[in-house]
Image 1: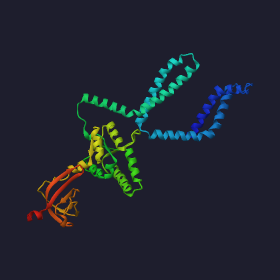
Image 2 (image 1 turned 135 degrees about the vertical axis):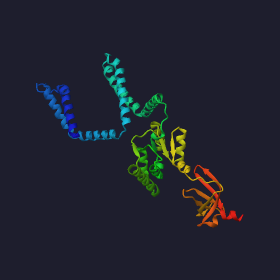
Image 3 (image 1 turned 60 degrees about the horizontal axis):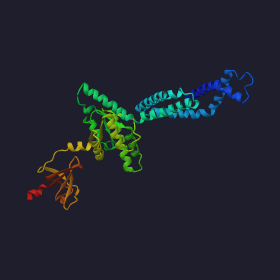
Image 4 (image 1 turned 135 degrees about the horizontal axis):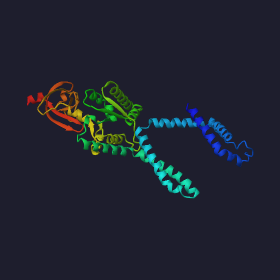
Length: 362
C-alpha cells in the first residue's frame, strides 16, 4: 500500500513539473518546434511517465525511509513530539514575520533566498529548543498547576498518590515484590525504559552471577506486573543528554514529582542532596527489625569464627549478625547468650553478646 502511495506521489509531482518546466526545457533543447510539446496535457503526461520510470529505482529507498521515520515517531514519547512540533511551529512563525521585510525588497536574490534560509534556520532552531527544553517546560507547567491548586485548596499532596519510580538495584534485590504484596507500598509503580534496558544488559552479561541477577530482576518485574494488585506503568521517555541511569532517575523524579525507590546508599544520598523524595528498602528493613536491648537473653546458633580471638558469629532470622565473645568453643551449637551492646551502622545493625553460661560462672 505504501509503495503505491509513493508511486502516485511521483506521478503527481512528475505531471506538475511537466506542466511548468518541461516545455521550457524542451525549448532549450530545440525539441518544441512543433505544437505537440506546447500542449500542457502532453507535457503533464510526459513528466508523469518520466517520474514513474524513476520510481522503479527510487521507490524502495523512499519506502524504507518512510518506514524508518514512522518507527521513530511511534517509539518517541508523546511529550517529545508535542514540544518539538510546538517549537517548530513557533520557529516558522518567527521566520515568516522576519521574512516580510526581505520579501518587499526589489533585490532578486535577497527577496527569494533569505526568506528560505530564515525558514530553514528558524524551523530547525525552534524544533531543537522545543525538543531539548521539554523537561523544563513540563516542570514549568506542573509548577504553575501546583501553585494554582494550592491557591484554591491549600492541602498538602498525599504521598500515596505520588509515583514510585523503581531503580535497577531494588528490582534485582527482589524484596520490592513482597513489599508490594503486603500493600506497604501504594500508588502507581513506574519502571523507566532506561532501567529495563540496563536490566536487559545485565541479563545478557557473559558473567554468570550478573546474568542470574538480571534474569531474577526480570522475573520480579513479571511477578509485580502480572500477579500483584498494583498499577505498573512503563515510562518510555529517555534523557539522551544524561549518561548515568541514576541521574536519569533523579531527573525523572523531579519532572513527575515522584519518589525514587532504591536500596542504593549512594543514590539515596544524591536524592537527598537534590531534594528528591526517596524510599530506601534497607531503611525499611532496619526499621522493622525487632528491638534488642542490652541485658536481653537470646538463643542462637554459633556458626563460624569471628575476626577477633575466641569470637563466634551467629545470626538472627532477619540476618542481623551477633558477635559472641568467647563463643568460638560453641561453633555448631545452640546456646543462650546475653546481649551486651547494640551497634547501629549505615550497613545495618550488629549485636554483641556473651554466653549466658559464662555469666553464671562469674
